[in-house]
Length: 208
Image: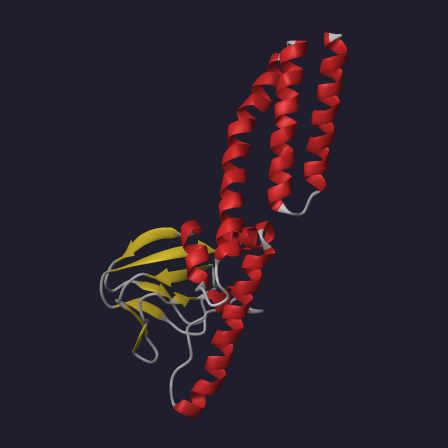
């Protein structure tokens, strides 16, 4: 009886694990993987298969953590209003760092590898001498440009704090929740429309 139960649990766990590899939506994927680990831990315990028990036992807390992170992201996007700044959704996934005065974060023509959220004053666009306003999200256009090149130089004229998100992390967030990608695209389109109007106003374009 125990052997039959163990076999059934093992087969269910294997089926769920296989299904998780075929899923594209990250939250159902994590839930399926977590459930599969529970079944496979039970299988390992009943069969006294120590490697199986240890492996999937170790994966359970990892999958719990990832599932909760993904659930929080989905809930935060669902609660957000249409005009909520996209930086509010990105900030929990960004990396805080302090930038010293005199630092050049990137130069015009550099390969774009990250986007930044500017917490306070202290950054400027070198070509125009224009200060970057606190609370701005900057550098996102370069991540999605065909050549992935910066359009302006960004430098620190004073000590400041920024939050960064790499291109790879942005791609992962988009894969985990396409809604986030939609709002980032909306932000970029709005930025490009403002940039297109600026030559007529005599103002510089945003740094990509």
